[in-house]
Image (cartoon, rainbow, N blue to C red):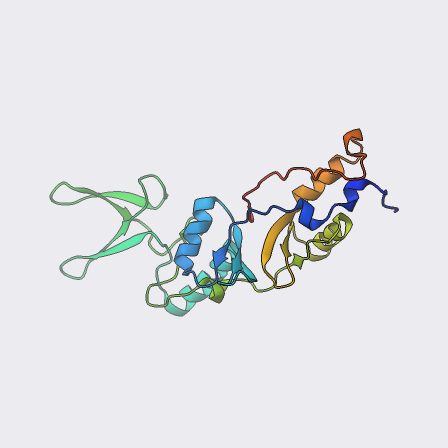
Length: 222
């Protein structure tokens, strides 16, 4: 199948990419990384060193895989939002630190003095991926958990090559880096679809087309 010689197909990764990309430090503790993912509503973020070099990706799948291995070895609690209160006689109350109604395992407990507190009814389960964390006795950093196989392209990569790489690797996003491996931006499959959707638009039959606006300027991996 021949590829039309259309101006939009001459666009490059550098012209299409989102430049505002949220990243994680490779030295960030896992608990804080999980909270970052939860805060921004993302399922993954690029990982960089202090000098800006891209070194990996951290996703909720990486967190879940690490947590399963850790639990198998230690049997420790798995949720980041717990506080253990040890009562006289050795009994424990596992307090939930989330707002009321935020977790299905919460249960309301009334103390003898009438004070109401939120306890965790299932402290060894994690109903949502953003509640994962490391145990304080075995601190782990993002670099210990992240995936180091990442799919990158230089900024001069044309649209057709971007599409081929996404298909070859089975991914929906490619990271754009400079020769020093510093992260410049992200190109998504949505960005390529916007190009294809405009191929028959007369407004883009120009020798110097304006790249279509990206759909999510602050996205990493949703």
